[in-house]
Image 1: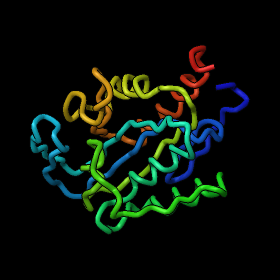
Image 2: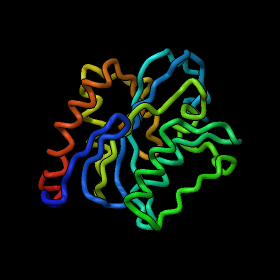
Image 3: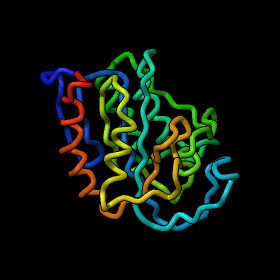
Image 4: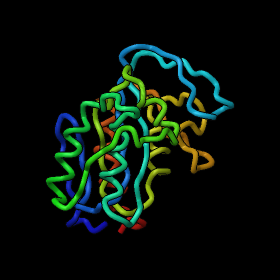
Length: 201
């Protein structure tokens, strides 16, 4: 990404990096209000995990070349299946992406959502809410770099190796976080450096 295209915008619900690429990477900050047990699909033979009250984060990307993959992925994450109410942040996501792409049809059919990724099983629960999203509008593959950086912080810890990272061998994309505001501050310093590195030019 060229430096002149790089920008940062922060509000209570989003922190946005980059230009108006329709693809990119993202980090969901997720709050669990009541403890529950959950199997992440077939992960570790459908083992039941206990999810304590607290904050978590998930690293993902949507790098397709058709339509607006980043918008559609994030709006999908903010939905729930079978007509269950979506995450509160979904309306703001639809508004944000519609303002940036008037031709985008952000209609979501909740009954059409099928649980596929590990994160789908977590976000389906009403005890979870997406509290904040870091949106990185950038066409490069940076998931592994984000995962390495976040795993190195004192404020984060994995629930289980490779959880949330079906498509990678050594990453973990779903982490518990003890101080999400501090983690967000550290990301805000790291991401511009990552996007301006020679490999990202």
